[in-house]
Image (cartoon, rainbow, N blue to C red):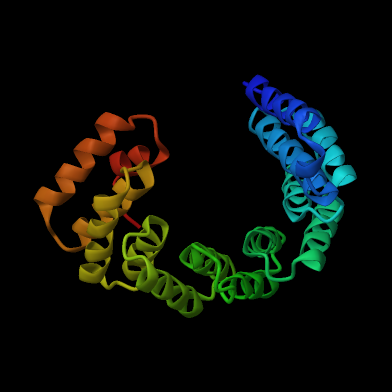
Length: 253
């Protein structure tokens, strides 16, 4: 991991602080927040490399510098969740939201955590809280997550409404398009499923799962050419995928 660049930035900031004239001294609170920010960024970089112990140490330094730095609490929660410490993960989310109750990132992440814990109603509620923040730049993502959470709870009508709302904000949102294609197929609305699937293909790379859905949609619509086209791509690009096995066995259900 290239952490050297971040350390050099920290060093530069430190040297800059030494050279600042008395009239230009930074506010101590701002300086603590800078330290917290840099250590949180380092923690995220370590997490990407699965250096979880080092990430924990950097987050501890971040909160030591600024105990109210929401991103550090949010990152702590993600790390504890990865480590399987459910209790500490949830407490970290609660700490973040106690400081900033409308923080969309913390609400969105907490919602995903709750859905993973099969607390579906609570999870969806957090996603919907997130989209109420007028400063949230991507509410469609929270709506899509709410839809996925509703799917896990087998509440298909609610899930569909969440996906539709997400697509009203961003008509090219791949996860929502794929989910709507799958829901439409499951309801035997095959022409609608094709429409959503074609829109998905235009904005996202094909995967074994999306190709397999395309094959089944075209099989249901008796379009042999389209079915064969998807089948050829699946077999050539993903020969070892489980979906390729389903195709070879003729399992379309």
